[in-house]
View (cartoon, helix red, strand yellow):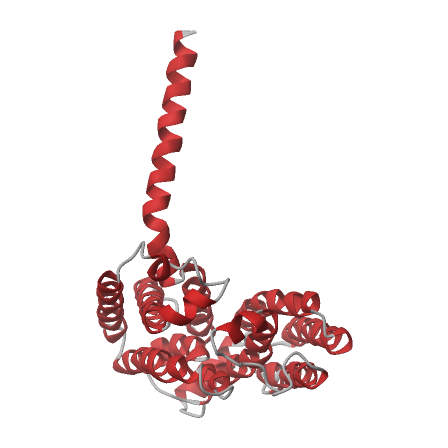
Amino acid sequence: MFKSQIKSTFNFVILQTEKIVLKRINPYVQFTKFRLSFLVVISALSGYLFVGGRDMVIILKLLSGGFLITAASNGVNQLLEVKQDALMNRTKNRPLVTETLSKRTGVLISMGCLISGSILLLSINSNSFWLGLGAFLSYAFIYTPLKGKSSWSVFIGAFPGAIPPMLGAIAQTEVFGFIPGLLFFIQFMWQFPHFWAIAWVAHEDYQRAGYFLLPSKSGKSKHSAYLISLYSIVLIPISLIPWLLGITNNASLFIVGVFGVWFYFLSYRLYVSCEDSDAKKLMFASFVYLPIIQFAYVFTKIDSIIQNLLSHGLF
C-alpha cells in the first residue's frame, strides 16, 4: 500500500513537471517553427549525401546551422507579421500575438539563431555561409513584406525555399555547379503546388490578413486548380532529370515516377472537385513527396559517375 502511494506520487510529480517544462518550451518551439525547420534540414542533408558527403562533423554543422538559420527566418517572419497573425485563426495563438513571448525576446532569439547558424555554416565553407545568409535575407525581408502586396510573393519565396538541398550539396562540393543547381531547381518547382495547396486550404484566413496567394485572381477556382495541376504534372519530368542524365539508376525512375504520378493524381482530383478536402490531401502529400524523392536520389545515385563529373568540373 505504502509503495503504491509512493509510486503514484512519483508519477504525479513527473507528469506535472513534464507539463510545466512543455508549457515553458512551447512558445519557443512555435516561434522558431520547429517542425518546418526540421523539414528544411532533412532536405539539406539529402543534398549533402547525394554528392558523396560522409563527414559526420560537417553533417552536424550543416544540420545545426541550417536549423538555426531557418529558425531565425521564421522568427523575423513572425516579428514582422504580428498584426496579420492576430487576424488569422491559424496563427492567432502564436507566442508574439498572445504575448507569451515579448518582441524583445523574439529579436534576441532571432539574432542569436542567425549569428550562431552563420558561424556554423561559415566553418563548413564560405559559399555555404552566403547561401544561408541569402536565404535568410530573401525570406525575411523580401518574401515576408511582399506577401501582403502581390501573389508574386510565392515566386519570390520559392527561391529561399529551394536553397536547402543546394546548400547541402555545396557543403560538400564547395562550389556552385550543375548538380547543386539541379537539386535547387527540383525543389523550386515543387514549391508551387505545395504552397498553392496551403494557400487554398487557408484562403479565407489569408484574406482576413490581406494576403492573396493563390495563382489566379479568381481565388479558389477552376483556374487556380488548373495551374496547381499543371505545375504538378510538369514536376514529373523535371524530377526525373537525374535519371535522364544517368546519375541515378533505374530504381529512381520507378520510385520518383510513381510518386510523381501519385502527386499529380491528387492535384487532378483537386481540379475536378475544387474541394478544400482535396486541397488538404494535396498539401499533406507535398510534405511526404519531397523527402521521398530526395532520398530516392540518395539511395539510387551512381556515385562513380557523380564523382567523375564533379572532379572534371562538368557538373
